[in-house]
Image (cartoon, rainbow, N blue to C red; front, side):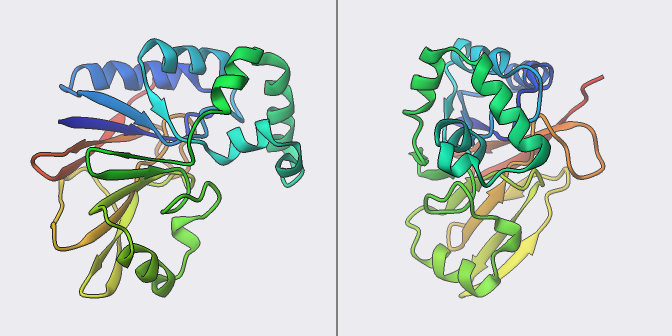
Length: 219
C-alpha cells in the first residue's frame, strides 16, 4: 500500500493538477489531503472539484474551519481573512456542506493524518511546539507515524528513547523505525514557503515503512 499525502493546496488548482499527475506516475494506491485546500489562492472551486474527481479524503484545516465558523474567522487578518470571505461567496452550498463533514483527523493503514498537530489539532504548529511537549504527545500515540501540514515546510520529528529530535526532509527516502514514533510534515502543494517554488508532497509506503519526499515543478 502506497499513500500520497498532500497538504496546504490553498486554492492553487494548477499546482494540485501537476501534483496529481506526478502521483499518477508513481504507483500510488490512494491520496489523503491534510486540509487547507482553500484560502489565499484564486480557484477554490477547481481544487474542490479535483479532490472529488480523484476520490481524495481530506481532514479539516484551519482555513476550512474559518470558512465554516464565523467566530474562528475573526482570528484571521489581512489577505488571509479577505480570501476566506471571498471564497465563502464562491463555493457552492453543497461543497460547504460536504466540507463540514471533514474530520479533524483520520487514521488509515496504521497512520494518523491531521492538519496541525496530533492527535487532532487543526491549529497546532509542529515547528512551534517544544520538544518536551511533543515527547508527551508522541508517547501516547498508538500509531508509529503521524502526518501533518500547516507550516508548509517539509520535515519532521522522531521520538526515540524518550528524546525528540527534529529533522529536515531533503530528497532522500526516510526509513521508519518501528521502535520509534514520527510526526512528518508533508509540505505544501500550493504555497511554498521554503524559497523553493516547487510543489511538495510525500509518498508513504506502508509495507516497506518508507517516506519519500516528492518535488513537482510547476512551470
